[in-house]
Amino acid sequence: MNALQAHDQARLKTAGRLIGVDEAGRGCLAGPVVAGACVVSRELFADGEALRQSARINDSKQLSAAARAAQFAVLADLQARGLIDFAVSMGSVEEIARHNILGATRLAMQRAVEALAERATAAWALPHEAADEPLFQREGGVCILVDGRPLKPYPYAHEGVVKGDGRSLCIAMASIAAKVTRDHEMRRLGKVYAAYGFEQHKGYGTPAHRAAIRKHGPCAIHRDLFLRKLLLP
Image 1 (cartoon, one colour):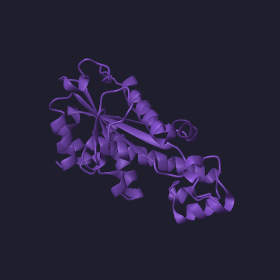
Image 2: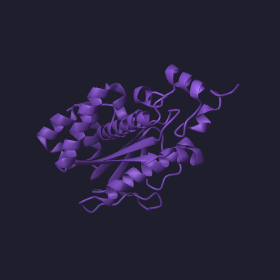
Image 3: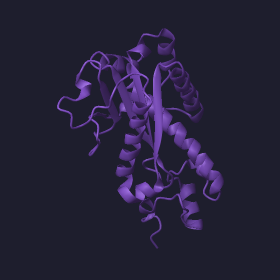
Image 4: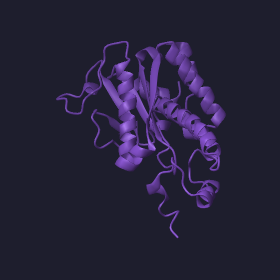
């Protein structure tokens, strides 16, 4: 058992389920921000083959694109076997402009965890922040773990785990789901806006991307607030 698995197994001694939450694309100049959420329970740790498979999971930022794709396939297999579930959701470029990047990230994270709750086969509920006794403190409840600092505001009781994608299995799973999904979306958008090379840099502020913006100007999926300094005369 690796350190990420051991972390979550220890947390599951006092919680029936963990939901890990992470994002991809928050620092990009273009495209949506994508949130992933992954729910795990003690059933995962009771299955020897699932333990072997999930031992490969790691922080998505530490992996090559090929390794992320392979680990995403592991997530899909574990999901098909009913041992985990995961969901992804996006905060659009319009929502980033309207709510700023943190607000759009919170919206995407809220949608992702709500998607898990809506399709849960067993009876469990998300721990509302206003509850007198947050559900994650009860045996059989749900504990939400978010990569980084706690979210403010956020409708569900949760804990922030700094560098959580390298410490918690469920957060690392969420990070892979978010990153693979966003990369796929940026490759799709690269075909629509061919002048910018989104399929290579995925919207991050690489020298080639910045040069393309200066040459062609921003397109519909660029984040205007992120480009102000770049486009100053």
